[in-house]
Structure formats: C-alpha cells, structure tokens
Amino acid sequence: MPTAAKIPDIAYLPNDPKAYRPAIGLIGCGSITKEHLAAYRKAGYRVEAFCDIDLATATERRDAFYPEAAIYSDAEQLLEHPNIEVVDIATHPNIRASLIEKALLAGKHVLSQKPFVLDLEVGERLVALAEREHVQLAVNQNGRWAPHFSYMRAAIASGLIGEVQSVQMAVHWDHNWIADTEFDQVKHVILYDFAIHWFDILCCFLVGQEAKQVSASFARSKYQKATPALMGQAIVQYDSAQGSLFFNGDTRHGPRDTTVIVGSKGTLSSEGADLDQQQVTLNKDNLIFQPQLEGCWFPDGFHGTMGELLCAIEENRPPENSAKNNLQSLAVCFAAVASAECGHPIKPGSVRQLPDGDLEAPE
Image 1 (tube, rainbow, N blue to C red):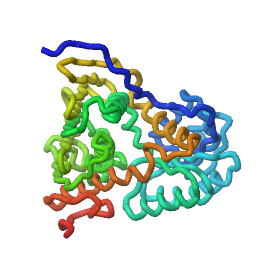
Image 2: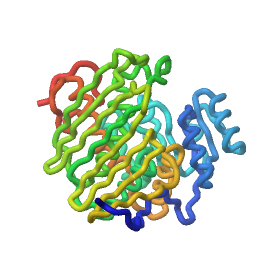
Image 3: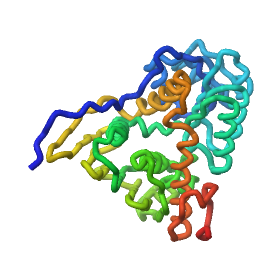
C-alpha cells in the first residue's frame, strides 16, 4: 500500500510582473467580466477604461470595480486612449476578431476571450499581425490556472511523472442554466464553448505531442431543459498517447469532476464535486502526495491569464497562453465538433472553421 510522503514543491499559483503595471482597457462588459475585474483588482492591476455598446453596462462595471476609469460605447475611442497599453477583449467571438485586429494595429497588447477565433486562418492572420506590430496576443484560457490544472501542468513540465501516456477527464454537472439565455442557441455549447477549456488543458498536458485524429459524439438527454445537446465525448489519438474527454451537463444529482494523467514515472489525479473542490493526488515511487492547493478557478484563473501576459510583456517573451499556442487547442476542438457532426474520425487542422450543421469527413 503506498504511503503518504512530503509533497514536492511545485509552483502553480498565478505570477505577477515584477514592476510592469500598465493601464488596461476592457472591451465588452458582459457578466463574465465580473470575474476578470475581481481578479485584476485583487492583483492590483489598473483598469483605466471600459467599453460596451450598452453604455449602461460599461458604467455598471466601472462603478463596481474602478470608479475613476473612463467609459465608452465605441471601441475605437478606447483604443485612442493614450494611456492604455493592454486591452482585454471580452466580446462575443463573431465580432471579436475585427476588434483584436484594430487593437493590434493601434499598438496595444491584447488578451482575447476564449474561444479565440471561429476560423483558424483568421487566427493565424492575427498571430502574424501581432508579430509584425511587435505586440503580444494572448488568449484567456483561464482553466490553465485553475489550481488543480495548474499544479498538474507544472508537475508535468517539471518531469515529475515522466512522459504522459494517457489523459482521462470526465465532468458531470448541471449546465441547464443556459435555458432561456443566448447560449441556448449554441448548437455545440458543450463540445465547443465549454469543452474548449478541456481540449486546451489536454494539449497542455500532452505538450510536444501532436494529435493525429479525434473521434467525438454528442447527444441530448431526454430529461434536459436546455435546447442543445448537453452530453458529449471525444477521444484524441496521438502516436504514443491518448486523451479521453467525457461531459454530461445534465447531471442534477451528485456532480463529479475527475482527471487522471498516467505518465511513465508516475500518475496524477484530481477529483471533486465541482471545478473548485478538487483534491490532487500524485502517485510516484510507491508513495502518495496530496497537496492542499490554494485559490479557485474563478476568479484566480483570470488572474493567471492576465498575469502571464503582463509578465511576458515585461520579460519580452511569448506568453504561455499565446494565441499561436492556443490555435493547436482550437484545431483539436474544431476536429471534435466536425467528428461529432459526421460520425468519422477527423485530423486536427483539416477543419479550418468551426463546423456548423451537417458535414462530410474531409479528405
């Protein structure tokens, strides 16, 4: 029977820049930005401008978090603000790409809300534009800094469990809250809007390994209240590894969220009732390690994404959550949605746009 042992020292908490504290502008002030702003305020970051097409919404966010900030209903006016160096763009994806382009051309560093783009070619063009303009472009994949995911990601990067052979993640929760909201009209709300966090963290866990094909499916529970299918699953195949993702968003009783990562030198697992109540366990050399982690996904994950961008700017390096890096996650996600639509395995990267409707398998 394995015995408990001293927990290895793994740095997993969000980082802050040593001295860089730029003025930040927020474009799009929807409900999720409460988490952004709570994280920024706690970290001591400065938000000096808010923009939303509904000026009342921008005013509400400003008054609640940064009462001295400017407010706009026109994004171009915010981008002309002389003090703003970093822009957090949290609008819906169908209009976000054009705003990112304008921000980059204005010389601003950008943190884009997830999912980054609906078209890989558009994403590649924005990545190239950021490089030409010598500014940083990152994606708000905040799940990377959820404490349990961040710990496991850092443990893998340190070589603690050797080369990853398999990743299995299963999430059971109630997603029926989307009924009667705009998300109720998103056909692949699970495999795309929700699961992008899991496709992204899967790519982080299997960094350096190329996904070869994805097989996925989706289904409606006969008891669910929401319109789109709330169940989905995907198998991601690599040359010498495999990822398995399972989602049931119609779990009304006994929610459960589990992750198991098997490596050549050890196994990492995490289990809990939800995204924040997670116990990480490391099995290695016939010993068991169970760290008591600090923080929670919301809002600390948002601290992580912005903090990493600011650190990258200060250190003149690409951020870990760069848009270029995130395109790999989107390629796997798009392939999964396409596979669920057509019923065949799909090669990541062969589907360039987010699929919509019935598709045939690409050649």
